Length: 87
Ligand SMILES: N=c1c2ncn([C@@H]3O[C@H](COP(=O)(O)OP(=O)(O)OP(=O)(O)O)[C@@H](O)[C@H]3O)c2ncn1[C@@H]1O[C@H](COP(=O)(O)O)[C@@H](O)[C@H]1O
Image 1 (cartoon, rainbow, N blue to C red):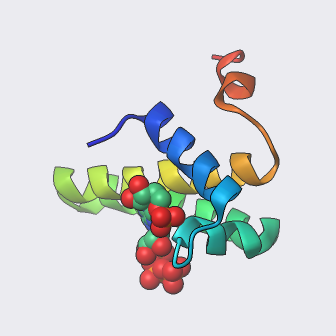
Image 2: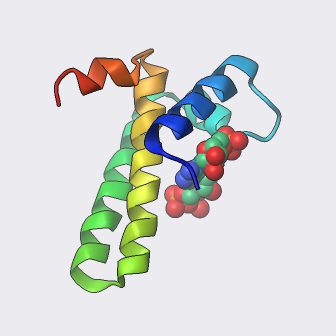
């Protein structure tokens, strides 16, 4: 189990070190268009899970949306601090 901030630190490290087989490196290399599509896809899956699926499925879809959101932020070089200042 990890927190949102811990996941972001892990993804920053993946972006820096670019290990073989990392899905984050592949997602970063895919570009902003593909990254944005994934954000929308996972957001839709969260919505559908909230309307029709179990709590467990909703939690899993939410985790994927958080991951995809972090990827798109990271690709633009933003930090979580850049986002948190608006919360
Ligand atoms: N939390 C996630 C995470 N959530 C989702 N995903 C990616 O999203 C995919 C599932 O998304 P989809 O439902 O769209 O499935 P899909 O369409 O079959 O997947 P693709 O064809 O798009 O690869 C997974 O196969 C992963 O590639 C994630 N990939 C990585 N993480 C975490 O990120 C960290 C770094 O991971 P790596 O970069 O892979 O080392 C680790 O802590 C991982 O647990």
